Amino acid sequence: MQKSLDQRLDNIRNNPDNDEFIIAYAADPDMSWGVATLPTGTSIQTFCDGLEDLVDQAKIDILLTSVSSMDILARERRLFDNSPVTPAIRANDTTDLWAARGGSYQQHASRPFASTTIEEAKFGTLTPEADQQPDLNLGLYSVTFNNDLDSDWFSLEQFKEFRVEAAQNDFRYFLEVFNPNVADCGVPDDQIGNFVIDNIARMLAGIPRASRPEFLKIAYNGPDSMEALCAYDPSVVVGILGGVTSTTYDAYKLIHDAKKHGARVALFGRRIKGAEHPRSFVATLREVADGNVGPEEGVKVYRADLDKLGIVPARSLKDDMALFTPGLKQ
Image (cartoon, rainbow, N blue to C red; front, side, top):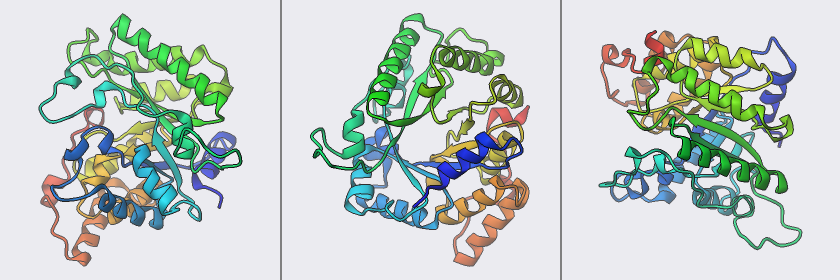
């Protein structure tokens, strides 16, 4: 079955007046939190049951999971064989993702690391049969710049190695570039957006288009940096990452405003996972992304769905209309 991701990417690249928007669900918290990912007594298999429901709904374009969860979804359950949703895996797990309880890894400048190899990710084994077909062919690669010469240089060295391995294995990837994870990194707060987009433009300038990511995603640091990056090279498809769990309005307005200023992709994780009813949340998220409803109306639509389902919202309507993303407050 043709995937909605490929259809949308083709339209974005070939139609200057397109209104397409790609939604990805980052359902890979086990790569960060480990056992603490899920409520006590809940298994990763049960977590995957909920992911099946969202894939069946087909409002998202990409489902991103850990390699081990994809064993369950793509290989055991064959979830994507007849679905327009594209499966993807986290191709690297940098140290700024490591959030084991009691640990302090995230206080240090991010270091690159990958638990998996591309061949394992594609086939579920390092020793595939000669005629074995891959179960997936898309991964997320993550980089974090911290204004630290040694760590940033090493991150770029590892990115280069990944690109070579990806090309040799005919593997598609999209690129995630985080804001600095070290609070006192020497970059003024009002320059974080510029620091990130300058590093992105510089790192992509040194590689041919054939080696570029399918798209990239960054934190929404406000309209100026988003517009500047999108205008710098319109052939690069730019998106946003969702960040922490927030209010319904913050999530819907984030997609609305980012799209208004040039973004064509959103990858949400905790905002979907933490919703009172993820299926209803995503259904309205798609309506906002497609421009059918505004973010304010979207909150009312979602809460009306909760009411029909007999689900009590986690917040009052007033509290659910608060904004948390700094870039939205500019």
